[in-house]
Amino acid sequence: MGRVRTHRRAAIGALLFPFTGVVALVHYLRAGRLAKRGAVDEARLAGSKAHEWAWISLGVGLFVYFLGFVAWLLTANNAGVTRVFFSWKHLGNGEMWSALWRGFWINIQIFLWAELLVLNDETSALPSGSTFPPELRRQD
Image (tube, rainbow, N blue to C red; front, side, top):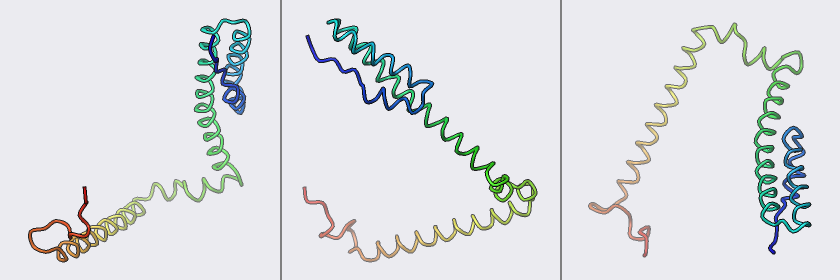
């Protein structure tokens, strides 16, 4: 006989999202019942299914709870977040998108100039023909 993992903690934790957590709990209980009867292979299969359903429950639960949070966020306080951040008056305004693109383009230019300055500073400190200073070379 061998040890049978019923995945009790995972099945109980899966009950945080009860629609799929109940399935994990049923498989856990079945695995325990089969292990007591001595049906080790069937108990391991049921324990494996309990573990699988616990993971499914976690994924589905996180997704559903996330969607619920986003819905709450957008509708709370008389839809204040929706009015401020997703106003069609501003989103449909071409001038706003143009200003946003100009600001983004300035950020790209600053990044490229800074990268050139950093690369130039690093390469000017190196002796000619070497790639890294000796103290920074890897010692294998």
